[in-house]
Image (cartoon, rainbow, N blue to C red; front, side):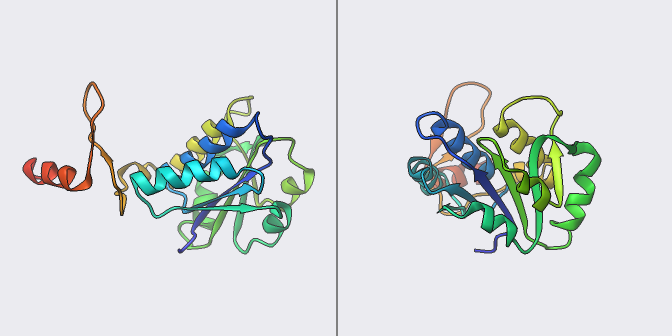
Length: 189
């Protein structure tokens, strides 16, 4: 897999962070990242993300690691640390995009789950804040990825999906991929 954008979830408190860690991974997948790296004690979150990828398509990889600090320190590419104390996303998004996506340089996005050690701030090429106010790390990741990709991730087509969601005004409609493709042809798309 060609990892252009990788999200690293730093820290995981079992029982307290299970849902949030899972949602960091699902948000990374849905909004354009290629892989998520979770702490080695977040196995249940990893399994949930893999299950969603199996059912709704990929490619997307999930990895468990216990060496997150060393991994970040040794990353060969651009490192963005999402933190409420960073530079405003709207002030640095073009520079981050130029240093990563446009230059085909791998990008590591660090999302904290507990108190992040100061060396993450020092290792980062960019410490980026979304609103500089306390809020969900999932919301910060979603806003950052959307700005990074300038909305293009919203048009992504998924490979090897067992299920596809059919957008509609009300209700829920999930079908197998062949049925979705037949509807798309019938609509002239």
